[in-house]
Image (cartoon, rainbow, N blue to C red; front, side):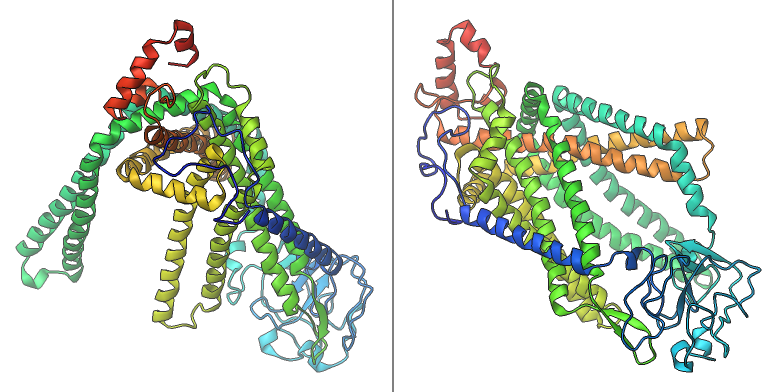
Length: 640
């Protein structure tokens, strides 16, 4: 039940014979129940926070905006704040927020029926605080005759803005140099034109997304059929690029240095000297980095054949279980629902607070410490839920692939994905919740650190900035490492029914014993998968650009093209993610198979012919002997 003690199947130590039950262990028990209970209890708290947020929050304040007296524009405000005469007013017919001075957060803002136009007379209008429904009682309440707040003695604005645009129900002066964000709104037509472009192009964009799905599936097929060519081309290109980078840097340095030395001293420029130094120093750095990469490539060369075999085996597994390619879409839907829930509750929670009047009658909303803690609690719950969804996906795929790998009859697998999903929810949800919690904690630490960095922006010294950036980098690296360990721990749990910590320990030990093979998979293999994603994005991106320019009259064609490329990247990431998880699972199954079994009748090897060549020769000889004794029907059903 605990993290590292107990739970899961009773399994022999590493290196000892294991039971010959084909596929993932069927005899399982619940693992890490404590963390499942913790997750459920935590989400009970999340529901409580959602209730508090719903009862105390007011998202209309954020969406519609408020005036300086706490009135939400566009609705009837019935609650009057103590010591604020102008609060609690009916603003049903005033749906826009007008800023007297957009560059000063303390300046007056009012609810108005429409944003001012160039011909608007500010001397007597609804833009004056002295006009109904407002009651202009004192000079302090309106900051009368204060140039910093753009208001005159009669309570009317003195702004010299020539034009206003409505942005999220806010009237924004487009030529206010004091408004930091005004550059985004200098052309009020841009947003509407972009929206029109998207409206025109939405149907072609949908078709192009379907094309992206087709190309991604085609890339999966090509990777499984032409794995050898793709991997060796990637390897050679990496080699050539490294040598080319070194040669180019030193060639440019030699060329610029010679030109600099040939120039008379009186005509030499500092910029030319800087360029010479740049290529010299850059040549040293590139030579060191590329030299290390070249050494790694040379060491990994002998293991590329295994990577080719793994790519082919992963392709075979996906062709046998094509439903695996669809499973991540359900995860995507769940994550989107989780995001919608998070944003909805957070908006309510963010706008919860107590209205308080200042000395001059303005109203602000104050959040107490409890509400702040609730916000952080809500953020962590969201991160935990998202990571759990990804953990369930990885476990399910690992369980299906391991069932396929360890099956002696690969033509009759049943429903491996549903069987693996059942194991996840019935036995191992606690272990998956623990793994997800670890990642979520690191992500929360990164968010807190980013929050601290934002708060200290421009206030801290260079030493503090460097330390914070180093901490941020370390947390990023830690998250990547932990995700990789978790991923392989889920594979071990899917196969043997371990608890999380035992699965992580076993996976780490197995990977450590196969370090060079792992390095090959994670370098060359990952680069091949990256190239496949880039092919999908580039194909759809250039195709959409040509289509939009030739058939549609768009003002900003780059915007729908960018949207299509983002969607294509997500689609290709989903498909290559399945392939990547399949490769990792096949490799770990292969490593376990080669270490635990010897090819005898009692402990047969489950590896295919493609993978047997990478195992111990004595084991392979024994396995071939056993397979020769199989009937033709048995050999065919085994999938060889």
